[in-house]
Image (cartoon, rainbow over all chains, first blue to last red; front, side, top):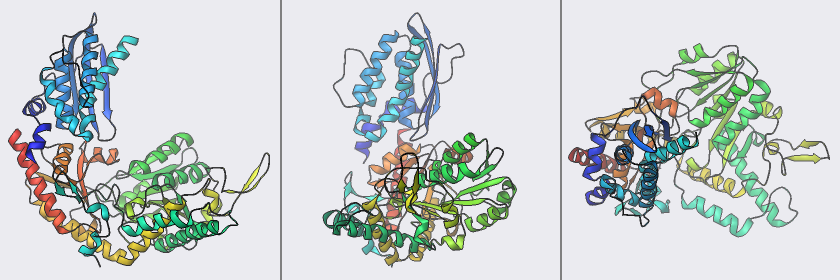
Length: 145
Length: 409
């Protein structure tokens, strides 16, 4: 049992779950979005500070399982300091990774790579993509306004 | 008699999941189906399939006989007075929506009250929310006791002369609580309200007698009681159903159709617009035969035993919290729990890797989760094919989940 589970619960994932990076809310935000997974009750509140097309800061708050919270922590870490286009490109790469597709590895994915094992657990993919979906939607809303 | 032989009637249970024999503990979501039900539906499609109530030909007659025969089985199963009171619908959700949209729209007016409780499934909340918004009515919730039960004092405090509808779950899909719906119906009637019972978790597990409960409407689903998905039942008292308008219009439910006006069939068909769920009804009929052969009293007894055994064994795991009534005699075979520091999704994934299927999430009962002050829980639900060895496997799985997460932390 453990070897299969180890594919899912990598040490780095549990580390992000236990000590999440960028936890909290940005008061002076330009993106403020809340999203939940209606089938299971996972919830994320994401705030971003976007200036001149760059994500200056990213913070999240929420409730959920280890995969959803670790993924949120990793996502904020990954997009912080990036141009919006890069953040959205990362989101696309992450989505491909979750679907088990070939993905663009020209960008260093850092900790995110540890989530690759989630693609073997179909029931958990939605946990991992929640934070990314929130980021995508939030950024798109901001661009429209 | 409940014995090991029962499990052999359920082909699906005889398989390995992730290298381990399957232990299915998610019957409150949907039950598995015995060969008797699968065969009955197969047989219907292979020999008797035709549309009902219209064919002069032999198959049409056979299909009609089977469909209406199933209705009579349902009538006996819940001890209704007449088959006119048995409406075949898609499931509990559709049944409650029908009551809200038909009876509710005609009888609930501005300032009137609808009373439900904190332990309802979403299907017994949202139809009333929508009705209340539409009619300018007030939706009231009966508070729960600390142990997850409902006290009649609280019901009396909530139900007033302005109350038109009281709707309550018979057996909670989260807490397993068995509610005193008979006594609540009496309180509703004293105040001139009708009593709606969500029987989705009750019909599979205990003997239902709608006349003894004296409820006005009773809704349940076939798929939770060994029957197929897509078939459910609304029971309603004849005098109420007679005065209600259909909510779906079309074929099957009409008497005479003119250019600008039409009339409806008699009960129960006026509520069954379109080609009915014939194979589903046949499957439900077979499920009822199957349950009757074992005996609902036996099933209920078995569930109390399973709950008692599970609560005892699971209670021995440090950091495991069980929600709902502490006395297994007051609950059905549903045990909802949390293992501290491990999110229920993670618990469910670890158990799945050992071949054990449990539910994790909010169980379509978000207001109840809020009342419990949790965002999600894990739930093990037992049915007639489960045994103590399934509980042992669960407990073993939970212990290793705990160990696993303690290790990685």
